[in-house]
Length: 186
Image: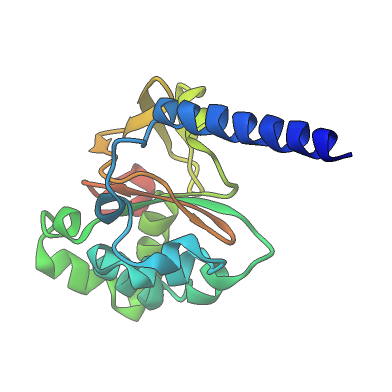
């Protein structure tokens, strides 16, 4: 009996070591923990909205989500999303007057179209994204995906600047540019 337990324990230990050895092949293995996330809520069971809200680099994107009235949508746990979230630096490239205009109630539809150009209505892993030459967004716009060995490098004109952050109801990728599809209306 003791010999069987030792053999089982040895086999489990070997399997664990083999699994750890394969971690280097994961596309985001070389990122430090600080590069991956600045707040551990991104690793919790929080919905995408709360993960975005916890990341200071996405505060402008979150303020636009709030202005568009999409907070509850992205808090819901019944639907999954893939979100390509522009960083604050990406929004800094857009004139402040444009952002201010988008936050006004009469422009809510334009704002929603802009935000939907950054969302897919289901969750996509890096491998699933890498296998697709283009992706269809929630606003029906299409963007080309650039990937290398399963790591997503770009979506359309934007570079992916952070590894995926997994939330309870989706996956978030940080990007360095705001995607401006024709449906945005400006």
